[in-house]
Length: 356
Image (cartoon, rainbow, N blue to C red):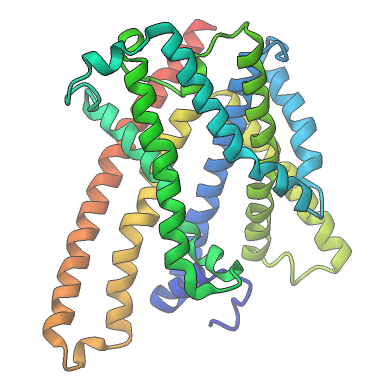
């Protein structure tokens, strides 16, 4: 079976070993939906940033068309080395944005936030807020779905744990620590962020416009890096690579990438804010792959290789009990937070439709 599905990723091969063809198709389908969710969030973020700048046409539909005119050629390239370098500047741009937002907040509120903040002020105020927070955290720290892909691409795959540890600490320092500091700075005027931080900057000032356009550029160059593997995954899943000649396979891949761009742009037009997309994708798909699937597949693999018959029978039973507990926690958190976040997103879509 493994030989027949040589084109699938390592996660798919593990799923194939544990659950057979059904597991392979299921996990590949979840990964495809996850990637589509990420692309929709990226494209929705582009539209949100552009609409707050003079570069907007005033129509979200027209902005989406112009966005496609840029993303489609980028996603059609065969060499992504130059695009990857531009996308790598995203970290620098993020730090500049954080510093600029902090400077703007200090000018507006001074140090009042640090003087008035209490231990209870920064906690989510409702179950819905907890769900949104949970989804964004899972989305931001959810390295599980792509761990095997990253490991396969590493020069020294045995360093994956060290690399993951370092990268997640960097993400934590960037988003959690700086995010909390900015929340405290803006507490006197905003009482917490309800959406993305960059939206609080003035819309008509020159420097905030430059920041928004810079962030748009970073996302424009990052999106193709997700669109291409999404198209490749679909082609592998339906056998379009092996069944076609080189030129035909290239044409099919090109058309598939264009279709993905258009479909995700169409969906992003109807989403009120990319934060809601990130939150829902994190709660539903990210939570499933990160917290539900690992203990489930671990239990299956333990039984598959019949390790329960070894001498460490008691430790094996303890491991299975722990896996079951983690599986139940993952299922409950995935279902509850996905439901609450979806309700929030639907309400905001209805509110946006009523306003227009």
